[in-house]
Length: 598
Image (cartoon, rainbow, N blue to C red):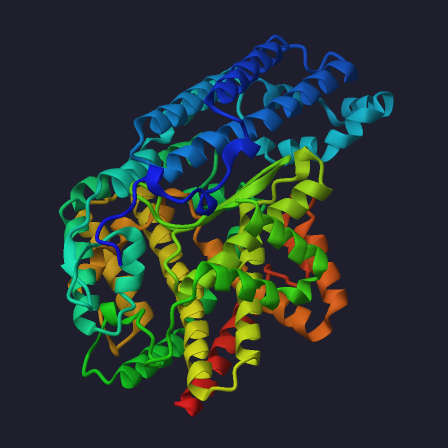
């Protein structure tokens, strides 16, 4: 393990993403930004005239779509540059410039939706009949109409649009703090070497077989965040106040309702998840009890949650080996799918390793007309191989949707974003289990499967409950101080992990390091997506080609239907609690098997 991270300029180019597919250089990006602003100015001149005729409506929508096609790669370029080195002030300036321009742009164009909403149904139908090219925009207009109760006057829409740049401050500030300014302490690893903890290394340290290493990494990580807990509580409180402002302005009863309605999802889906997972906490307690027994400890602590419970079975997995294994595991999805994977692997879609200032974690970012980009912080672990499969699932979902759907309907709703990624993980797990005859290795993999359920269904649902509780508290007028947030989080941690887990005092502050809490009720979709993916992957392995065909129809759907309806194509109905329960039943089955093996 290197004592210090490489600077961005020192990273081997083959392990970095190639942003020239977006723009050859920053000068071309600047030119694109100028063109976007010019298009916005042309659109702004149409204010008051969108509904004059079918032709004026078509002219506005056509130019708006062209402008949006250009804004997507421009935003992607700035964000990718910033994420690869968040400490680079020039990259920071590009993001800030882009956000400032876009905020002004959308403020000037805020008149559009109210003008479209003012067109009555009879007139719209006449417009469609007189100008057949408007049919391509029918579903887009219907989506605007769906949100009519939450749409305001042109003046008010303009005012709300003017707040966008300001409203990004909590998330942007947390990102700068967490990825650029926060310096984590040094510690001694299992080899007796002094290393600096980083976001990427923490995952490896907390999995160490050496309990002293795990404890030291855990304590030093959370001691560091605790020094800033009041600042971070203020930031998180600011995020919720932002959501409250927009929910009230849009005439929603709560921030939760506002968040799920963006994706055309009922709050009942959120409630189903919380209720079903809470009804199955006994399985989580069994998992914790098994972990305690196999680790042979008198007390199981939070720093013991990630280390493998099957000793001496973990090994290093190079990035090259991970790519080869993922290709073999995803073979059931067909040669066309594998060809796209190879394209991504061989043509620098992926930014592979951690470097100084690089954004933590992993993600995929799709851009219409350009291949997707994947950020990783690969450290040669089994988890990292699963992350590779996961993020390429996102990437290929974006590819299928943007290839099949026109731009207007190519971006799938966030609600289904985690399905394709997790389906890849399940297929990888089933492949690895099928191809091992070694009892210890099988137990190790089953442990990883359990950890996936624990991390994606139980843990993300706990996060989702934290979001729901803290938003409701703020809406009731309660102050969200660091102590209040610590208390809420600590109680949830105790309830979700159960009586055999020692909820260390430091874990109360875990909320302070979770970037997803700035994403507006995002995390519940990891759990619903995981549950849907379990069902889809099992159908693919059981049925073969017919299930694959249904799945690819889902992948190609973009937002041409509501996300719940798209999932029904793939055979999953999340309007009921059954998919969640069925996934948790699989968790129980895996528990049964590993308990017999060990």
